[in-house]
View (tube, helix red, strand yellow):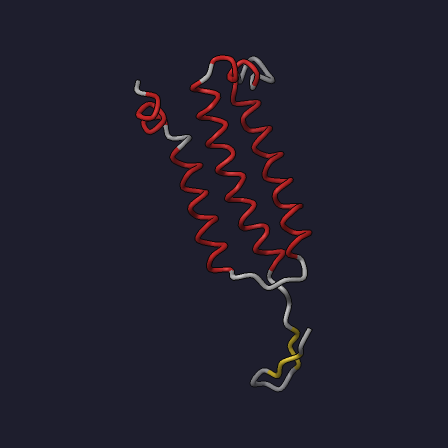
Length: 118
C-alpha cells in the first residue's frame, strides 16, 4: 500500500476497493437470481412445486431462500477474490445495475406474462 499526502499534509493510505465492489456486484447477482428463480417457478409447475418450501407462501419461500443463498455465496466468493485488489468500480456498477434490471423485469408480472405468452 502506498501513502499519499493530501492537501492538509496528513498521510492517507490507499485502501483496495475490491471488498466494496464485491458487495455491489453480489447484490446485482442476487437480484438477478431472484428474478430468474421467480420466472422459472412461475413458468414450470414442477419447479414451482420444488420451490414450495412453506405452503402458505408457495413458491415465494423457495425463490427468496435460494436467491439469498446465491447472493451470500457470490458476496463471499467475490470478496475473497477481490479483497486486496482495486477493481474498476464503474464497470462493476454498470454490471450490477444491469443485473438489478434483469431481476426487476423478471419479477414484474406484465413482463413475465409477456415472456410466457399469457
